[in-house]
Length: 189
Length: 96
Image 1 (cartoon, helix red, strand yellow):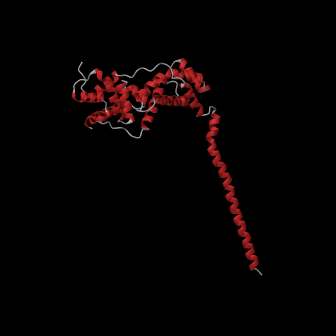
Image 2: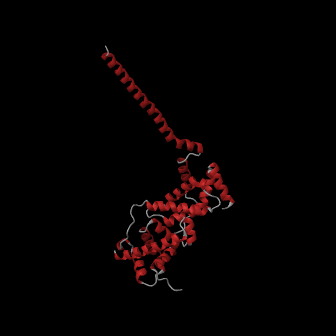
Image 3: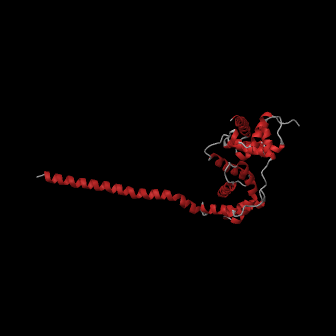
């Protein structure tokens, strides 16, 4: 952590310095918004969750250990806020063939029956993936997003989530299997 | 390079290629003000004030106990006094 950031953290903890809080928010906002956008439950507003992250951040900043990287601490907090929001949804959707757009249906067919996919299907592919991820548990969705969408190494995911590396790999393996079943089920329904 | 045959890995490859548009730099308008306002509404700044607020329910419970306990004890005393008076009357009436 840089000295400037350390000073800002100390200023908030000691004096509740609002200027320091604003500068911390400016520095950390890009990281937090990126995490929230990648893990945002469908239908939820990103800014609401980002606000929740920063409110929790400032409320608990006096417990932060300055020996550890601030970015990891913030990432973990953002992920936990997103996990909580995902868990608050009462039902996980199951997608039928008719729920998918024409482009998404084309991606399903291409993935399951053709050896290669066309790069022009990228947008529809992302839409399809986000729908299928909705059908997984919050933890499964999070682990696949971190590992395969954000391409973070297992060690970094372990540091962000507090899980050990073996648990990360096992959960990812099971989540991928479920995602494959959801993909095949979407074609059948 | 051999194409990936796993449909899930191919799906993630497509999704990565279609990243969402970059957001403008900087905080949204009024964002910091809203966060600080929510913080002001939550915990008080002074740790002693926080302790006092936390101890308030305990103090209220103790005050209620202090109020009800003597009231229950004095009611018991009144009953025993009434009993003694009754006993004295009965014995006085019986004795010649």
